[in-house]
Length: 322
Image 1 (tube, rainbow, N blue to C red):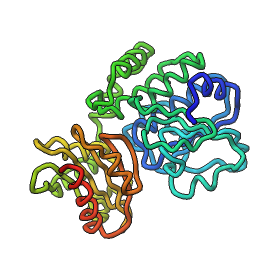
Image 2: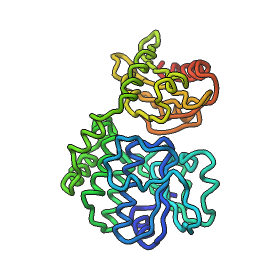
Image 3: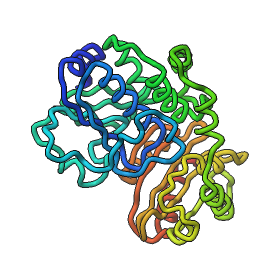
Image 4: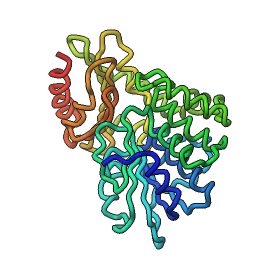
């Protein structure tokens, strides 16, 4: 069941102790959403803690309260309410973490993925929203929480990253309207531009070089993919990096309909990213592999030898682009 915004806002406002959860390998929308809601709830004197399993990329260090996001679940505290943000299912926070959460807590599920399985006691899932941060903005407005520049920076980062700086077709007139409201409330565009798009550690630039060396194109020119083995990543000291933009180089190639990146994040554990240029539904492809996402942007994980996984996935993708 999907609740309406009035129900979710009323419940969030009436309760007190919150644990906010974002998905593993966090992206900008996950981070911006969790920070924005944290800052909003703190403004009305709620008790709030934040958890994300993996380390947060350094490009988000300019956002206020980022140091308060923990990768350890709180212990010794009574958690009454758990809010999942930008998670299509409960295991997106990382395998096994869900089973360690307090059993009697009320679960809120706030998301924009079409593949969401409505796992919460309260669900607010809007697949037409450009980003979960867009949904959080509307919730804060509905809760009559004044949005300050700190919240505006967080939510703007979430929106700008999930829309590819407003380039992707999930960008709508409503997205631009909300972005304009956030700018009016103090979102710092220069800070966002410099930190999100013009600041990369040397290791990430070197990883880009390796990725472009390992870029392949199908015979018909409709599929492009990047391979990064565990050794490739380790040799560059890039094990902790989660570069969000590498896959876009596959989609830039003329004639390519589907771009992919295969990253061996642990030996024989492959994280796969999918991007569609126009019409191919990569969410359906990812779902076939146990993953999910959006029509034009999705992901999945597979266990096995890197080359074997690539061969398996290519067979599925080739059928989709025929």
